[in-house]
Image (cartoon, rainbow, N blue to C red; front, side, top):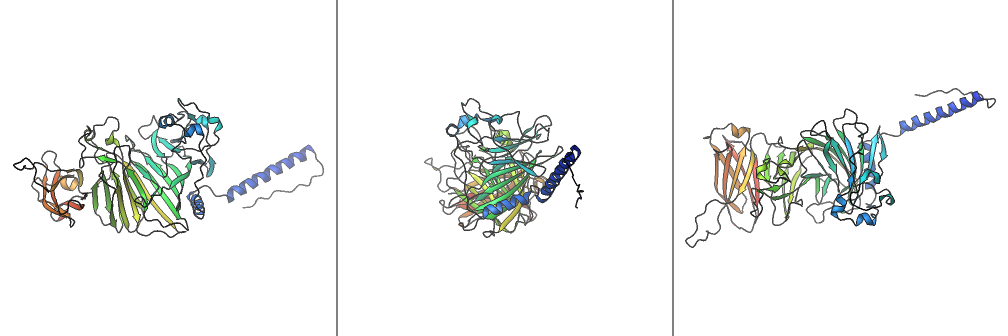
Length: 528
């Protein structure tokens, strides 16, 4: 469309002609602005992907300014005393359904750039010391300049209409996490995992964020992020929908940097959690029965098989994987929701969420990898699970994937027929020798309970079988299945004899009725 503006002949600088000249100047300026708005595309995922692709064509550069000395010298408690002002969150003035605020940078909290997107136009959110309360610290933030921010938090009415509670956090490398109604923070998700099992793990980092200002009636909020690391870049879009089960829909487009060493393990949709001890690995010196953010890895293959692997705190780093033609979903789950199984009034592990990852589209063949390593206490994460695609993109090629992370509480994803409710390891009564010693090389016993629709419908005397197998280093000497009269669940008892106790044994077992599987497959690695 074109606009015609009449051209007037001006003979003198009369007041009327001066007004006309001013009008024409304003009109031409407005047209120029309109033309510029039409040629400059609105902010979008494609704009971000183009930026990530451009960054991938150059070598990685971690451009971070040194912190002011007084800030860098703060100890842990001093940094924790810096809080965002409660009365100054983004979007509160507009009474929007979401609010956001920011973390302060610190010695171990690297700065990121944060932008707000309004009407498709990004605007840099610069650091302002007036946004923060520095507590008991004696500091001079007015001299610091623009430090950036240490991350961001999203708030919404996740637990009720009167208060906006914290619903999601992005802070540190590519970590993010979210909460559904009534949940407490536990495990985290990451944008990407690179060579987690070695030889040297690479930590991709979200270096810049774009927050899309939500509409007045919005039920979800959108966050964009630019990811960068030594060997790759990535464009990410997160659509966060709070609720009883908060969901994070992720779209990612990754670019491999040219001229860099090959990546051995590309971990997609990674989850990170903590397992210190549990029913399968009790800790006799702690008053708490169990301490963990997640108690098992659950996964569903495209062929319809469901598997459950109880987590461990191993004596040495432990990597296992499950290969498949296609993936239906996987997650690190906190199935045990009973307070009595934790007895921790502060940590409230029974309220920690499970995280279930559902691929969007066909991810093709690959494997779910589980990495666990030993920890001395619950302040460390020691569990990681992620999808490893069979085919890696070549340098310069893009890999695009999408998935949903569902942060679940009591109502969480379960197999359709039967599922494990607890896994216990340990022998019962063993008759001692005449000298009081126990017989050597006793079989290892596992007691596994199952519940679920397919099992609940069976009578007590139904012919349910325990189908169990072990690898070449183990022999199943007993496999029993029976209904537990105390709670109506079905119990499986296995006794395993190891050929070489110093070597691991891989176990698989499930319940069968009438020739059909009526439970998920319980799988366990018996470590030396």
